[in-house]
Length: 310
Image (cartoon, one colour):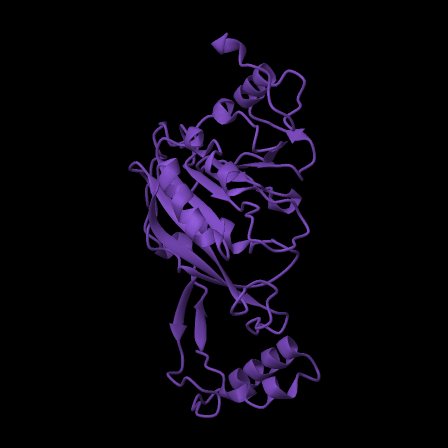
């Protein structure tokens, strides 16, 4: 969709746009967003909000847009990229897949390789939490290196785990290349100032470390900002915006999430965690590899010796 600026004014009160209906429409939209009786602190400066007028160009894109050739999909390789697109050049996402497991014991070698890993570990941050945590040594010994030869990892950290997370990235073979910040807001879109975490200051944000291993190809750099502003939800429920950022960065590739829960399952992702419901796999090769490694389907205990190593 093409858009064009109609008015250079940045404030409602200084708008000189002759179209009064346009201003009235903006006023109505603000009323709809804030409700019939908005909070006084929000309604006082309602018309001092910065905004821009836009005009939608409804011309037929099939007539005006030049023809383009779809870019080829990533070549198959060790980073989990897809082999080929459909005939129309569109990559097809696989349905969500998940495995209920204890990641301390899971043999991850049967899963194959992935372009992107995301993990939200239950760090031991020395606080009372509504879920079990893992010790520092258990985190260091996770089988993350088995999942990637080349690719990116997104690692959520908080509190004292910020330094431990950087240490784990180095141990697993990654270089920290970037960092995302999630600024937490409440239902009124205000920054939370009374967070329940933080020993010295109340935490109103969380960090997601971005690590890189090898030289991953076909990444779309520079599309998104490194700040997410989103409402808090259930305990440890991270913002859904992270999935869009990752998909735009590495479209159509295999992705895996560690320590996921039922709300985390996503198309083109495999979710591992002890709170997901059973096992759901659709990839025939992955199903065969899983049955070979875990004949009884139980991934909540230390696995039997690998028959291939006997």
